[in-house]
Amino acid sequence: AQKVTQAQTEISVVEKEDVTLDCVYETRDTTYYLFWYKQPPSGELVFLIRRNSFDEQNEISGRYSWNFQKSTSSFNFTITASQVVDSAVYFCALSYGGSQGNLIFGKGTKLSVKP
Amino acid sequence: ETGVTQTPRHLVMGMTNKKSLKCEQHLGHNAMYWYKQSAKKPLELMFVYSLEERVENNSVPSRFSPECPNSSHLFLHLHTLQPEDSALYLCASSQDWDLSYEQYFGPGTRLTVT
Image 1: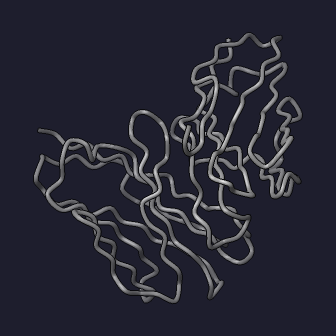
Image 2: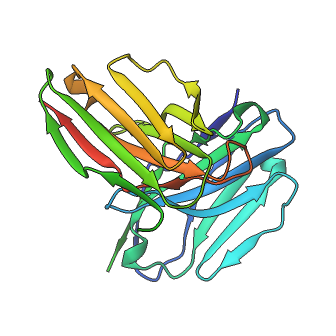
Image 3: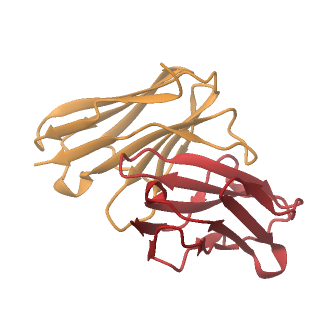
């Protein structure tokens, strides 16, 4: 079965701390895509990154970085030097051949960054 | 207007009312989606339209009726809803209905059924 697990329901950190959000996925397909979305209190999900199953290269974008490891079926997201504006719910999602364009979402991790 | 817009942003309706949610995308995308987000539940995909044709209908009760008159507009018609239908309803679009494309979301409609 295809599945995305975000085991951390809520995380609370103090500003400037680094924080890693975990994502573990399950799929039997060899071709699949992984995504991260941010949902601030306003409600809109904001697309952060897409990674395909053939590209295990880690990616860095400013304070954000992603670690994709097929060996452990994980696609973890790290925020360096967190800021209050990073407070949001973060969702990891999976699409695979059988899902067409449909995304399988994890339950989300609520990150609270306190000043 | 840019991205994906949704109206209204908030809606309160009684169980006997009929209302409609509207979504518009300004991205030139070919696929559009309706999601339901309830408290403490994962995002639930409700409907998918690709090139104005419904391609997914995930066992959604008939009191929810989608309509896609063109590739830029998507509606969700609501009638005789139940209190458990109270949720955030999100619209999204993607370039095509394909596993490789990310989806772009609107701000959602917060629906309360009384």
